[in-house]
Length: 225
Image (tube, rainbow, N blue to C red; front, side, top):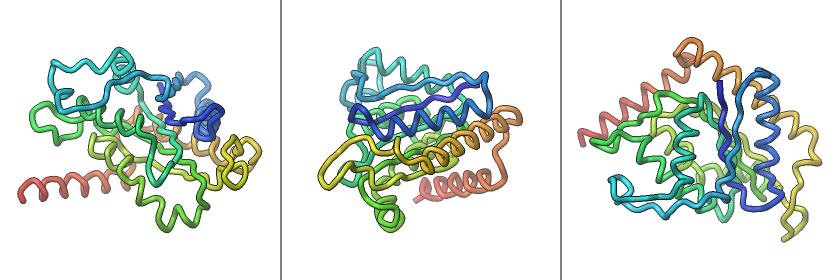
């Protein structure tokens, strides 16, 4: 079994990457033999997405093929990203657009191909948690919704707020938050358990099956409009 972490952090050290590492530690607590891989998107060289990338004439670069193989070879995927200016870093959005070249069917580019692969999302930002619940979560909905569109299963999301070293100062702060570290490790452990059950049975829990069925029904209705 393998879990892949795609980290969109822009800084070094990065709060998003630090929490991704704790998440993977939790996954390993659930299954010590689990294979884990972490890819830092900012280290990749992937061409800017254009519609030509849906064809055979586009060469997005060797890093894209590496990420594609890693995604298709994983049983569960974590996306960890900071929130900058009410959205995610551009390199993550560019990667999501490229993922559509294999996450959607070649004929209509509208049918998800991930077959229910579980995903978890970690967000970090400078705003407090109430701001996330009230507004910020809506500004990043396109990230999990893109994955849902590609046929992935959104297992969960977590937001860590006030990731600032001071007013107007950026830096690593989550390493000094034991409650956050424990929470994220537990998120990772539970996600690994979810992936194990999904891989063993080939079935999602009832709630996730219901959500998926509603989503697909909505797609069919929209397709007739």
